Image: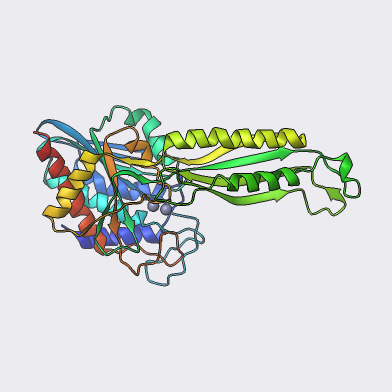
Length: 380
Ligand SMILES: [Zn+2]
Ligand SMILES: [Zn+2]
């Protein structure tokens, strides 16, 4: 397997990172690599700049989808190596350059070893970091005919032993959303605040009240984290009492159902507070990430693969607190997301000095292709 070529592509992607929704050049590099591999179908511009290719087996069988993400982050790279990002404030700090290279390697493998039966679809998904990519792909007309029986994805995980496989039954990672509350009151002379409606007190109350809903213990099923991330009230005009304000929160819990309940509780709390202070409110939601629900059969397939290939396997008790939009797929299709250890001392994801370890390209391909074989073997 030409891993040196894949490492070169990985570094080219790293040098030329593109933000979520703008992965034009990345999609071109992917399509250029895939075209000569003669997949049975190659789709571009899926859910934005997504690329999808499918390899058909010789006999009917299950349809397996493997997904990688391909977008970069608005972070300034501080590394000085040759393949450092050439773009200011944009860099691959989540390793999606590496995930893409792994899936290209799987495509190369499949072009030489067609699946014995069924179909294998490889999805190069855009815009993971904003939570818009997976849903965009699912809603794309071109994708609608693809009906996978199994879906799998991996994420590299710094802080874990290199090549270790990290498994979690049931919930793999949190359901995450962002709540934006905008309040409209009335300005007044700062000397006469009694003539205005100042949103500051309502915002202070809302922040305090939301904090009482926190259950920041990942061991608990009713885990909830509400983090105030941004607040702006009034203007830098010292003669004026504030008349408008807004506050933004990220919200995390373990399931979509809990999220829906939590959302209505927060809306209610916000509305009753506004009523008390005679403010009008506007609530909107951004960056929705559904939690990944790992299916036990899919997890068992990965577990068997890890055992057969002699990979060290870690069964996690607690889910991860971050969002990952592959949840859109595992909520709809049977499947699983798993972690691939990226080294104990590798800088954390989204840190300015992070870089995807190239050694993972080989193990990633190895694990993914073995998952395909195992899934086909299980479905006689
Ligand atoms: Zn990320
Ligand atoms: Zn990521």
